[in-house]
Length: 437
Image (cartoon, rainbow, N blue to C red):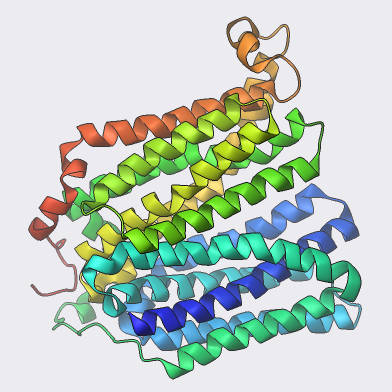
């Protein structure tokens, strides 16, 4: 656990610096273009390499030194930041430069995430998996709270170059921690099929492994069914709050900060508690509770209700994510985790990429017109959500959050999922897996 905590400390420092740069560059892009599309494209180009590289990264994580891969990702991140800094200081930075650089950053960042995730089971005792994952959640939530405040204070006073120097300094902290620790490598199993497998078989190994194990298939299906409505509601959250407050960004920031604080408190509490003995309860009850509190955000009419509901919903995010990941770590042999976790993460990355398109279409083309005074849904839901701007978005938001509750309830009726931790010893390898029993 000591090695894990050293790496974790380096990552939390580095992530705060990275989030500061992202926040400052977001302001820079908006100041330069005034275009929401330009901002969306930065996010799109950061996300796309994750879809393309994940399965290849999974193979690399199982074949090569995971510590080396994490160091490589840090080096690429430093080079990306340096490239942006040099272009900016020479007054040559253009928005399209960011599109290229964030593709590199996103791709190697995904490699680092996989190498880190696959190393947890080698660094932490099985009974500590949930606690370790909750500490991982605290990294992003802490950065989400502190980075915007720090960058928002420094950027207008010292400029973008000061943010770059801070980011590079925090990278050094992560780099040093990775240099001084040793990450155990999984035992290399005899593998007489490896040389005869095609590239396609290697790339699809993770998916075949999941499909060959009913309990893992159930886990993947359940989390995907949760992620689709949950990610749609996340896309709708910002326009919903802005529409209901007349575009008040201060209220949006206040409510969002409450969510960040809730996430940190939830992660810390879970790291102390350790989670449910049966981790599947943490996942399913987390789905249900998170969905209920998110529904209250949609139904609420005041800032205090939004803050309270968002705070409570966010405290449960570390619970269901950490519980789910702990089950995967306990199920998959360490030497296979890179490829199998890559397959699972690819599903999540793909969902995250397509849900904004689904949310935008449903909100603008279906629900908003239907909730206008003359719309088809206004007579049914108008008394609850109103018939003004944002009413359709709110109805869609609440519909999606209710779906997340139903997924959690459904999970308890699905025996293969409910008993996943009892079925773990019965897992099988897919044919032509490249692994000898």
